[in-house]
Length: 285
Image (cartoon, rainbow, N blue to C red; front, side):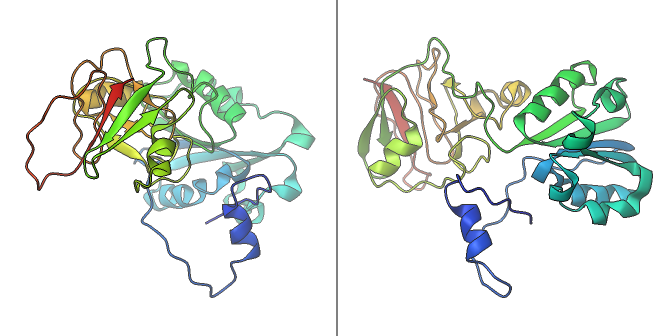
């Protein structure tokens, strides 16, 4: 596991760098994988900065499968790029691209010609991801796989029809919570003492995701893309920590099979088996 020290972060990286030591015991949860490695004949790996970390086990897996692969790895300067020495054993399969020596990576050299036999994996800063997404628009639909460090720049922009004010009804506790403009559901319910799992607070990790059985939430996360939402239909998840609000078509009760329900109109009584998981209701103010 690689953790970059971020002096301006929320404290997690500082704790890892300054408090943890060899032999220290920490409590962890099983990982959530929104960047799964899929089998293919050929791979183009593209990494920027600490985005190299998830590429290392993927490269090992590709090697074990005997697949063809290439890595383009960019960073501010060679001295700050992790794992460069370890990658040297792969020879010409790895292109190290320090920006202070060579400028911006030549993505056209590896993505300029779409290939049907290649999966593209990219992890790094938003500028790199956006550029790779642009290049891959002409590639096969499912060729590109990316992992983000932060939410998309426009991820938190509400749709024109999204509600500004609504209420959340916590079925398990019976608490009704007001959510106003600029507030997330997660922030509001946690402020009232309702326990909810969360991590990134940006909509990129999926920890606070819940399934919606009916209705159309205004999705503002960076986990589910349009294809995911189309495939999931009414069961699509909603990220509570990213200012998600009921959308224009949420006229019916939105049930979930985990903890939450979103709806646009005041709730009507629903008869549920007490053994079922609890839910939340969202209604307009």
